[in-house]
Image 1: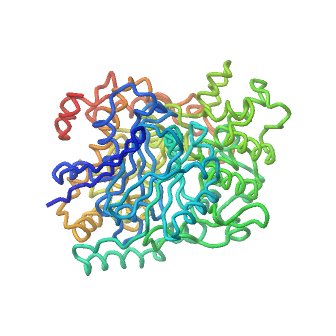
Image 2: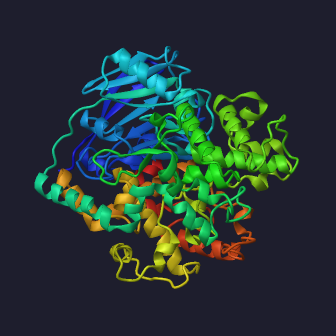
Image 3: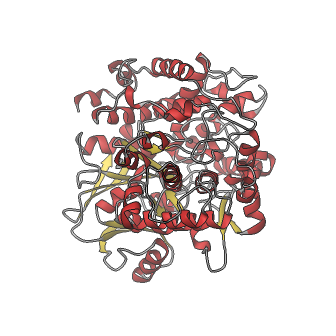
Length: 627
């Protein structure tokens, strides 16, 4: 029998804490993560709600398997209506909070309303109470966490919180845990700030044991042993995600100067993960029970505090090559500012690079800041100004590049490289064309972790990646992975469904679902079986992933989104002008062809891009038709 879900139901306007139970037969359809999150949103919130109003629902969810002693199995998901895109908002983070939320007996938290004063929520088992947060409102994350622990008189606490950027409702504000891990994308921190909720705190406690401890331990040990045997995962442990930056430059697909080119000559070597390891790395950090230990912790005397972690690949790109900055110290400082104040490093760095191009083209005045490509000092200052909404420039850029472009006018919109208002991550559709389609159709805006990436299809048929692709019905490989055909449309959709399984169950993609990861679909089936006694199948899991995507799509449909929102900025269709990638690019014709096939395969209306009634029925979502 599938377990019931136990949800904390918080109404901040009334200061009320209730408990909601979702029966197991229902929870099995939406077993955690943003599948459960968007289920709560659709059930508790009508269409047309302002994202920063009390009526928005902020859902924090774990999953039934959170807290099991396996690598990459306890991520935290946060879902709400996004103030950045106006559609469904979704974000995931690593760390320990998800595991301890579940260990305290809670599968999720649904938060509505707005407190009349700053508060934080404290959870200790069945006890959950709202506490006055006036003393920590305005504090950066490190200081706020210290005050909370001192006030409660307990050091073993997990804290997810907003910084001053969330309080000031920066549109891409993040929610930070452990002072260094971010639910970064789609502006969830702004939603939390609008509710005057500073933090959610859980007391650390022991997780429930697995149903079959011996079998689960066998799986866990096999995964851990595979770290050193898998070159890509071993590379993550050695140099972090930023270890891939150099390879992208050498291939000619490292986003540079706001997507104007794909190489950063003379600068890329200074901002790689390898350089970080050799210079400023203090230690590797880990997430709950994880053997990969890919998290960077850096330290620079007098400038960068190790409590705020270290930059990932996306951060090194957006504050590095995007901005034409080759100063690793400056990148680390901006990463620290984002973790202290609570901002998404992708949107923040990309918005600054957008502003640099606007300044250089005479569209934007920076009041003497010197905000031009390559100016590290100006980049750091702009990051601080955004975090504080300082001055006209900081306030403007805190809206994100798409809204800022609309206010600036002229051709500024050409320099906002975003989808649905969210800045595109540091992976080029010029090199990964199917990923470009996912950028466009993904319900919560461009996201690089919502499907697998095209180059994996160039792998030989006997590799682990190609073997697990076959388990989800994909078998074609490509000598030229740039090709866009009918199978690429299937690759985009089917891997999106599979990655959606991970975002439902709270699984790290590096361990569980990427083509080069340590496991395959059958291992997830075993994890569910041995962990919680869920006798599932790859077929059922793929339906779970597909159901999540369609619920999100339906949410956006209620908010007025259509096929017209599934587009890419014009710069994506411009061929790379120089370097090894010269002449390479995604054409509009191939993009629209594969997007059309994607709609057909997904069971979405070709005119609107939204799920048909038949698709909703097939996925046990008939109840949505009544909303």
